[in-house]
Image (cartoon, rainbow, N blue to C red; front, side):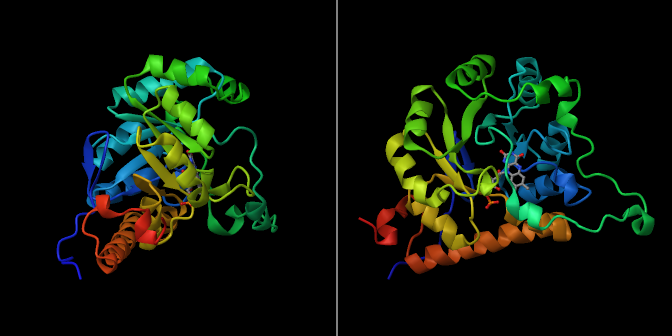
Length: 305
Ligand SMILES: Cc1cc2nc3c(=O)[nH]c(=O)nc-3n(C[C@H](O)[C@H](O)[C@H](O)COP(=O)(O)O)c2cc1C
């Protein structure tokens, strides 16, 4: 019995207001799904007013993506022990105007992708015999231009608080850590001056057996205690999932695979359609819940104490 004719789904992150709490998670080499890759995603994000995060293993440069998005995106970095390579990418993103740097910390070693292996192609005939030239989707990673790729890749990774300090001392961009799945790490993020957290297990791609992020979220929200924004990704497939994540304390929610499916199927219009479906579903849930703004969504909305 609430008047829900006007619903405000906006959220504010670092002083910037977004029309909805749904954001686009960083995913690598989108040229693998559609020739326009990240540019198609950026144009869809612009059309639908969505926050976009760009992976450093992008098929398009941060400068081109920012132009397609109409404003600078948030830039995500896989750091390496080879500091000068990290530095080049950080400085380039900052020069391009990116306001936020996302450091992904949940890809520590090689990942074990059993599902992907199950779908591995077994026919070893050369595709180009029937389909013309086959271009590797992994060709061309413009953010690696000018860096010593072998040194960057060979150095491997070591995520620790020294790295966080080094990054913070290097850039004025806000720093978000992506891949937090433990409340103690969340507390340490706050103590080390990190500006935001993304609760994420990389969509289960580093390792398939850990807990679901939606289960972990309330523990992290409690540990952070409102001091910095907490975003979450992993398995968000419905508008109702956005609602549940917000009710459990997330400030905003990110999607990975769903927009890639849209991109692979139809390019920019496919991504737009996916974003529309999420927005429409989320609005219906808000209406049905009798909730007209995001701040009214609380654990009580899920009948939790
Ligand atoms: C194909 C693919 C590529 C990804 N590439 C990156 C990446 O480059 N950087 C990153 O931080 N996360 C990457 N991720 C993880 C996503 O940012 C996100 O955490 C995950 O996809 C969320 O789960 P969902 O796909 O269930 O929505 C990737 C995920 C997928 C599926």
